[in-house]
Length: 269
Length: 269
DNA sequence: CGGCCTTTTGAGGCTACTCAAAGCCGGTGG
DNA sequence: CCACCGGCTTTGAGTAGCCTCAAAAGGCCG
Image (cartoon, rainbow over all chains, first blue to last red; front, side, top):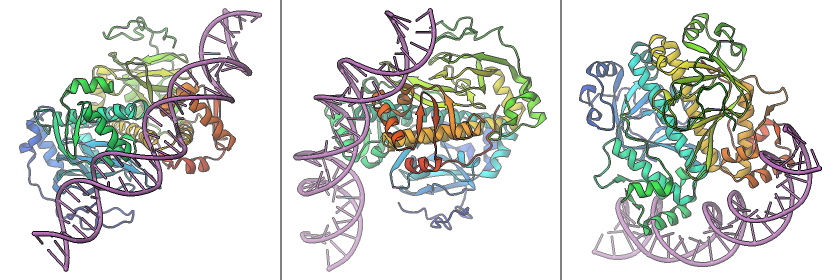
C-alpha cells in the first residue's frame, strides 16, 4: 500500500502520464553482470545481446514490498523487467472486487501491453522488495526493429505469459477450491525453481496473504483459509504465512490434474 | 467433432508431427485482395506489407464447422490466421473437464505458442465454416527478423490476446453466473463488431451450444441454461440457438461491470 | 417415424459464501 | 514493560448459488 518513494509524483491520482522516477534512475547493475544470467531456468544472453540491452536500459530502481509499480488506467512511459523479487498483477472492478491475474518473477516483463495501448488495464504491486530494470516505452519499438533477436524473445515472452494465463483460466473455470490451491502452489514452486528462488526442499519464502490467494483463485477469504488447512492436514501442501512448501510436487500435481511444463529456458530482457 | 478432410493423417492420435494438408493447400485469395483489408476494426496493411505477407503465405484452406484445426499436445508445422469464420480454443483435462480459453475471430492468429514450443497445449475447433491462411512455422522466425513491422504486429497481437485472457480471468474469478453470461455476450458482440461479423442491431449469428458457453464460463450446462433464460426475461440478452443479440449493449456492460475497450484497429496477418 | 443432439424444467444436495467473533502477532506509545 | 491497536488468521453457524441427477420436450436428419 505504501507508495514508492523514488517517484517524483507517484501520488498523483490523475490520468495524466506521470514521469515515474525521473532523475532517480541509476544503473546499479550492468547487464553484463546481470545475476539472472546465472539462473538455470533462464536462457543466458550472448555478450552481443547484452550490449544491445544495456544500450536501451535506462537504469534500475528498487521498490519495497507493498509498492504499487503500475496503476490501473494510468499511462506510463516506461517498461520494466524484474531483476529481483516477486510481484502481482491485478485488476480491480468498480465495486472493489479484485482479480489477481498473474505473478511476475525475475526475468518477466512488466507493462508490455502498455507499450501498445496508452494505458495499462491492471495494477502491479511488489510482494517482496524488488529491483526492476527500466526501459523507455518509446525505445521499445526501435528495439524490436533494430535487434530482431530480442524482438523474437519479446514475442516469445508474450506467448509464454499467455500460456500462463490460459493455465490460470483452466484452474478458475474447471477446478474445485482444493484443486485450485494445489495448482497455485505447484505453479508458484515451479516458477520459483525456474528463477532460482526456491529452497532445495520445494519451498518458497513469499509473504502473500490469504486474502491475496483468495483474490487470485476466485475464492472467499474464509473458504481459502479452510482449504489451506484442509490440504495441510492431508500433507499435500504446507502454506504458512510467509512460506510455501510442497513436500511431494508430483502428488500435488496429480491431485490438481496439472501438467508441469518442462523447464524451458525462457528468454528474458 | 468431425475431422478435417484436408488432412492426410489428421486421425493420427500419436504425438508425431503431422503433415497437415500437405499438397492440398492452394491460394484462393491473394493477400492484396484480402477481404479483411476492408474491415473497419482492423488496421489495413500497406501494399508493401501485403507483399511481405504474400511471400510467406503458403495458401489457404477451408474447414467446415466442427472441424478440429489443432489438437492438444500435438506438434504442428503450421501457423494459421483466420480469414473468415469463428473458432474456439480450449483445453481438456484428463478426466474430461474442458475449458474454452478464447474465441478466435477474423484476423486472429492460431498457434503462435506452437511456434515456440514444440506442441500446443490446446485444441482449436471451428464454430462456423472457416477459411484459414497457412504459414510455415519455420518461416515465421525469419518473418519476424526480415520484416520488423510485422514482427511488431505479432507482438502486438500476442499482447492483445493476453489482454483478452486477462478479461476472461476476471470474469471467471470475480463475477456471478449472470454477470459472466452478460460479459461474454458483450465481449462477443464487440469482437463481432470489430471484424464486421455483427448485424446492425448488435446481433451475431453464431451456432454455439449452451454446453460450449458453459465450458467457457466455468458453469454447468443446466445452470447456464437457467441463467440465459433469466437474462432473457430481464431483456438484457437474447441468446437463441444460433443467434445472440444484446438490445442495449451499454446496459449489459453496466450489469456485467465490463469496460468495453474502445475500437482499436488491431493489426492482423 | 425413430434416433440423436440440444434445450428446458424439476428436485434435492453440496460447495463455497456471508456474517460474526475470537485468537495471534507485530508495532506503537504511554 | 505492558496495554493497546490494526492487520491477518482461524473457527463457527447459517445460507445461497450453483451443481448433479433425472426426465421431458423440441429440432434436425436419415
